[in-house]
Length: 24
Image 1 (cartoon, rainbow, N blue to C red):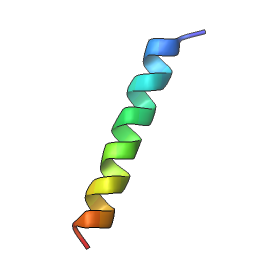
Image 2 (image 1 turned 90 degrees about the vertical axis):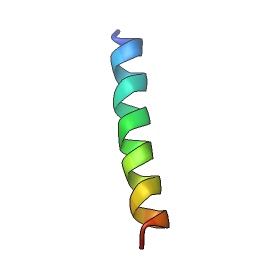
Image 3 (image 1 turned 90 degrees about the horizontal axis):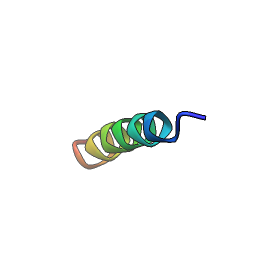
Image 4 (image 1 turned 30 degrees about the vertical axis):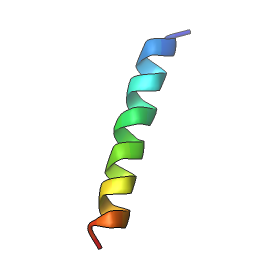
């Protein structure tokens, strides 16, 4: 299981989601 990869993807998606949510 690629834990590091999963965390990286989640972190990137989370940051993008937060950026869009706050950049509205």
